[in-house]
Image 1 (tube, one colour):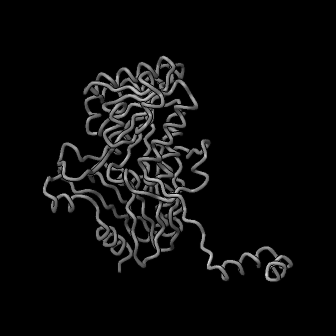
Image 2 (cartoon, rainbow, N blue to C red):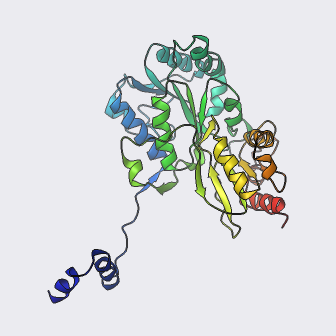
Image 3 (cartoon, one colour):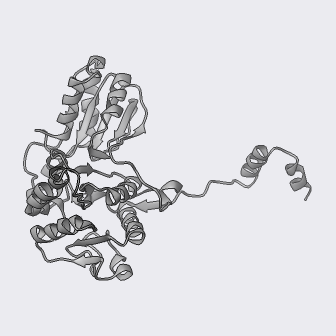
Length: 349
């Protein structure tokens, strides 16, 4: 008791420090949430918040989703709001677009964005252009979501990145979450947006857990579409990452998580280039007409160009259809060694 009474007469901060040392106190472990569960949580909260929101797609209901992203939603909301569809992207994407025009807010899941090519007319000609062609009278508040980019061992027809494809089209907003915080905040913002939003998720990241900050646990948590996040500050160079690839080595780099492909946050990129004087872009898609190419072009055309001390360097997937063989597949997508090589090249070290 004497020890406690002695402590209470000291400042609270000093007391806290003494207790930590005396009882070997450690901070509680941060909440860990997988990307899959973060998307699920975001959709669940929006389904609960707005009865106009519904989810449709192949296997999303009774099977809980091909990747278990919609796990538990059918049992909670029933057949009218979690809807299994036939294997017909052209058909159910068209139904979803029509529902959005009628005032609902559909979430249209493609089992993989490779299959969205079956519905490209609905996504581009119907969803993306109607708001503009109607003079702002007919919004199309729809979300197209599902796994995008390289998968594992499924070869050329199932391992494509569609960021450049959909980012090319005016009328769409295109987001690409990396971690769990991104995934929840962006899916909720996408559902609430009056424009069609393409949410490009990463299949290989679904089961990866990330720290989930307290603010992300709120039902009001949103990440604004069109705003990048600086994941790491550095002095030497700047990495744009899509999809995100973490680089851990001694060079001081600024790592920017773009989060949104369209509209692109060029202000953040330009400010970083003006600070670091170098630029390396990283993406999983093909090099020709890619997202990195667009960033490099805009830097060349804009005020940050004169701040570059060396040419910008792109790190991309190989300019080939994805091979099936494991060793070839690994060499067709960006690896850490490729990023390190690019940074050393641009720094001339």
